[in-house]
Length: 112
Length: 116
Image (tube, rainbow over all chains, first blue to last red; front, side, top):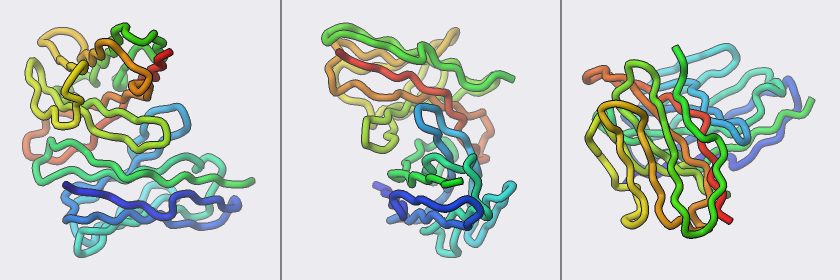
């Protein structure tokens, strides 16, 4: 079965600094999702990547999927306290309605 | 368009009681997924349902847990004879019927179950 690893496990950055979170899969990624979870709340969808080499951006967050489709990175530029939370990468299977397998998450704290 | 709704948001049950968690998917969504997030653990898939059908229940414990998504009404996750180890956040997600297109799942706020 597919397993996802995330690094780092946790991250503390000063406001205004850039940061990168990585997600690595043991198998080919067909659909790769990034979600953000605030403590005690549900998941907020950030981005979905499907094609090798694909890159998407939303505001100050950029996500990339490598050409081999086994690794994704999430990059935040000029971090703000509002970026704090747990970032989860998730992957589903070949079919479009497969369950999503999630990574363990990366906890991000941004110090003002 | 309201998002995925779950209720109750918090549920306290004594050991041996039954817990019923409800999920109303987003309007127009016919696919419902249940996930469980145990303390200090990641988010784990439990079951995937379409209207009146269980499609994939590979993540459901074999005993005490059941799920349904009736023709009318919300999806229900039922846990019978709850034990302390069932204490967790249970999330429901839904996605639209988009044929072969891949679509992200939209998550509800979760139900936090505490078993005393």
